[in-house]
Amino acid sequence: MILLIIYQFICRCLHKQVIQKISIILIVISISFVSIGYITHFHKVKEPYQITIHKQSSLDYLHIAFVSDMHLGSGTYLNDVKNFVDAMNKNDYDLVCFGGDLFDETTPKEMITEALALLSQIDSRYGMYAVNGNHEHYAQFLDQQAYKKNNIHLLSENYVCVNGLFNIVGREDVSAKSHITYQQVIQNMDTSLPTIVLDHNPKRYQEVMSESDLQLSGHTHAGQAFPLSLATAPLYDNDYGLLLKNNFSLIVTSGYGSWGFPVRFMTQCEFVDIMVTFSKK
Image (cartoon, rainbow, N blue to C red; front, side, top):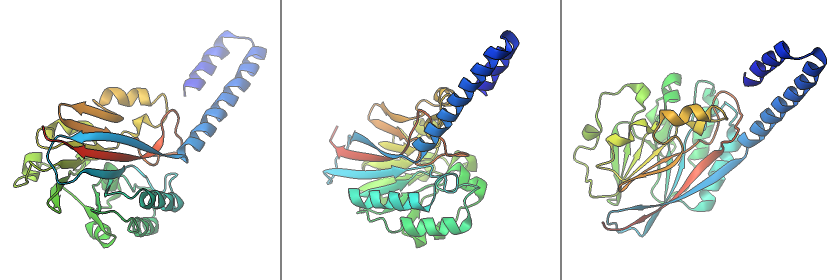
């Protein structure tokens, strides 16, 4: 669209011969950008983080994999899921978390079934946990039993205490317009334990800061393709990467896939590798 506006401006100001040369240049630039973006989409990256949770734990460390926004069917396919499963098992994770939008409105039902069966092959010490994203709600794929059948715990406004070692809290996406507060979700939870929150959208992280230690989110795609990334940054306190506030950490991933079209430009498709250590305040 930007190139089209430039082209229209040039047409009004320059002679025909010059316009033709510039048109060719703009076409070449456009094709190059799209080609680079297409290649970038299919290059999946492991993005590492090291954080400290300032609470006592009998654990020396916790090795977490976090992935969000696969958008199966929108340029992400079963072969990409197989590669992801291989990466998970190769890296020997303690915990694997899914941040929503694994599926969207374009995902065929049979692909959902096959993808979940592939994900069930991931071997992690403390299991796999997931939350819904906005696109699972748009697609009306909210079947907890389908996840459970494939060894994935789908959390929706509830929490689990894993082996008495740490808590995982799963929030429903803001698109669900749930009226349940975070305080209601964690009622009776032992907040002295390290607490990890899964919330697809990072916007409301401040609601959980006082009782939790780490929030994992996606949704933003880091803008997916420049210059759209300039539009997402003002909408969130943190639209990508690590935000530290006091003893709280928020990690926002740009996602494993792309939405709408399989193009990335000046952003990346990734899964997140988090090494958590513990120390007393």
